Image (cartoon, rainbow, N blue to C red; front, side, top):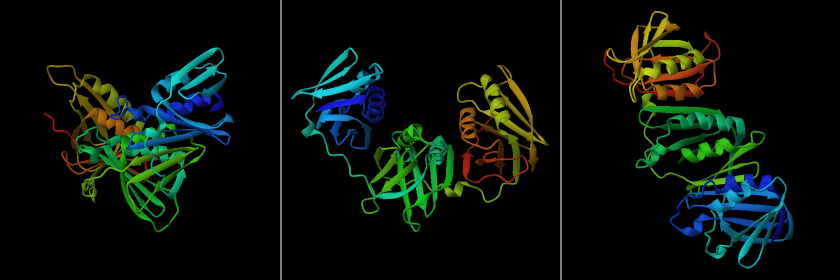
Length: 374
């Protein structure tokens, strides 16, 4: 192999591809990144049996070839290269990287032992990257970190014609977002469950100038693929039954309040300063005012009052402040509509553009209140 590439492009591509390599893979060969040089491009790939990542960059190819080297080491080297051209050359046992006056030599790994990457499934549909990224960030709010319950670490994605719905829950809250996309088959109805961490990682790195293409094979139903700006990721789907969460949404909410989103988030952050770890903050709705409070009588206390537009009876509910902030921060609109039934049943949060407009149902955040002492 003899290749000339832009060092910055190489560093960026290596960093993106090697992000899926585990620190201590069960099989040492999975610590590698494969480089394939041919036909004017350098293709990079990594695999860990659950996730795969593939990217390619433009390159001057004097001699084509394929090599496997330690991925994390290559990432450390390429990000430190000077902003000049980088030259990659190989012998039977080494890869040499030269840029400016810097030279690095890496030992090659046995490429024949590297597992075959999964075949990228057929195209299911596409959506603009900005919509995709926002949807993943919203749906990802309620993803659980409990490794012993894999289904809760995922985001359920339902494809129904030109509508896509993403849902996650960690048992204490539920996040659901819906968006419109362009399906390959308008009659398609498919439901998948994919890791929330992978989706968030993809959303962070998408090129918002290009669409995100989602790939899925309805025959095998084991892999979901994502393509954007030449980068391809695949993920094994999570095997398991996602909880029946639709019943958690109430048909009617007799108590509703509309609040300025930024003012509410700011008040929560200030009041939560005196709340001990895992202690709730209280939200008391009375008339056209919301009073937020935290702390106990013999400890530090805080209280703040906001003007609101409210319908229904007075009510006091209490929440984990971090869960509140995370859910409210995912809402794009400037106003929040809180919809309540009782002090112990889940509360729904929606965004709306104006203080007197209808709420948007594109994003629904459901949060279970905490018990508190009066």
